[in-house]
Length: 172
Image (spheres, rainbow, N blue to C red):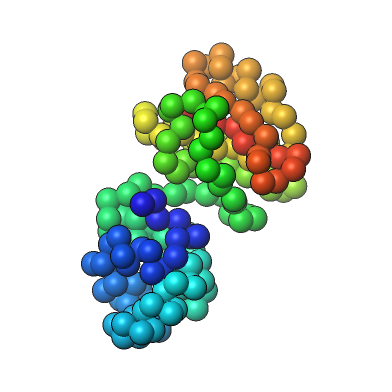
């Protein structure tokens, strides 16, 4: 089970019961999780994002602390709008597995006057060999794809199935 901000608390604790103490340590308002009735009711409704909000925590830091506790790699996303990651489809290459190591929101960067290619190049230096970077754009990033392929990176692009007019570009 990949731990993300959308993971339900109940599912997380079912898969990783030892995280209960970690959650209570990080977000003391959730000490009530020890009560089995509250655990079932609240846990089935609350996502980790909601737990972080209630505990006045940064969602990314909270999720990454739980991921570290169970040996999962951190998710590093650019600040900005929430990212909706679609399920893997049959057309996706085999090298796209699990969650991306880095997520670059090209739309957000362009709105701030920054160039997404620069950020992608910067992050690729730190990319683990078996992981990938995900670039989100509201345009087809053809020149960037060509630049990445010339640098011998694997590249796969597709339309976002849940966000019309947006592209998902996977780079390894």
